[in-house]
Amino acid sequence: MAKVPTASEGEVREPGGDAGTSGPRGRTVQRAVLAALGRPPGLFSVSVRPLWGDHHRVNVLVGADALSARIAHSFFVETDATGHIHASTPRITRLYA
Image (cartoon, rainbow, N blue to C red; front, side, top):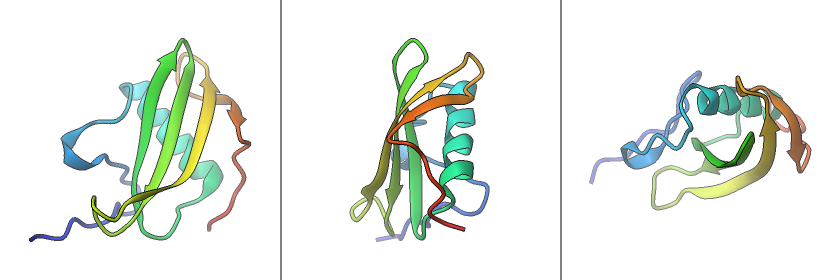
């Protein structure tokens, strides 16, 4: 079985071809979360799911592959129309370099 590589620097992806984002706004949210949090070791993907209006659920998954991936961080975020984060629960703090 082929091993799926973890996300490389500057790349944020969803396993299985599922975009896991709400278009350009979702990609902006992904980048903003990683910029604030840092890149966790073994980053597998960052999933941004639209909820309602400008509210999203963001899950940061780590693991070597889809079978071992787990949610390391989860945030409920409120954004503007372009995807810039205005509020987050819990607060996103820098944990990684």
